[in-house]
Image (cartoon, rainbow, N blue to C red; front, side, top):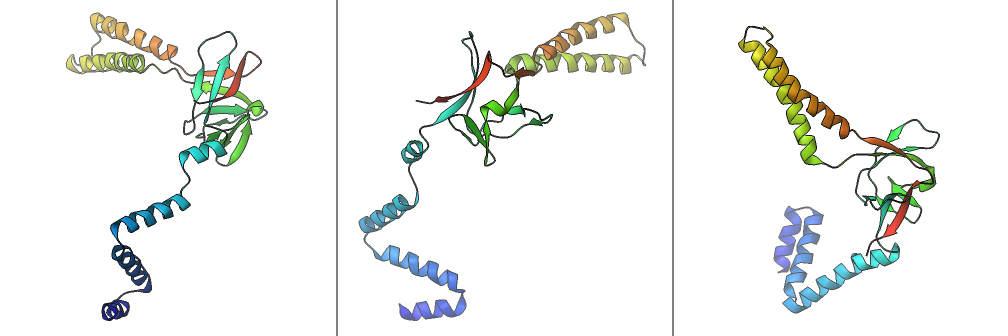
Length: 195
């Protein structure tokens, strides 16, 4: 065995030798001892999810609530949020790393709820958005195809049909337009515990 190790050292770099010796030691053990040693090493290195939850005081999420309303908008760690900070004209669009008791952790920076002045909210209606895009772009496409087929001459029937699809498409797009919600005493952010 030592002869093979010496040959291995002479042909390859030192890190490969260490890797080979570690694997040979692992395979030289009994399978039950090997499993126990691997489990012990993983237990010492990786904290469990329960330990992380206890350390951070539990998993939390951010809720945008309106007083008197039942519906709330939820933001979890890993979600993207758009907001403005007080006395700052820029709209920030970061990803939430963690939700604390009274602040957000974003890119290692703690942002208090009281510093956030406005939140941009999108309406989540995928079917209506799809219908809006299909109606508007379909009507424009229909008008262009008809113009090309009829040697660039407008016909009344084509314009009426195109307008009949374009107007609902644009109205749905206006309904789905994102809103900027100003935070005040009636609309506020709250950190809640997940169970």
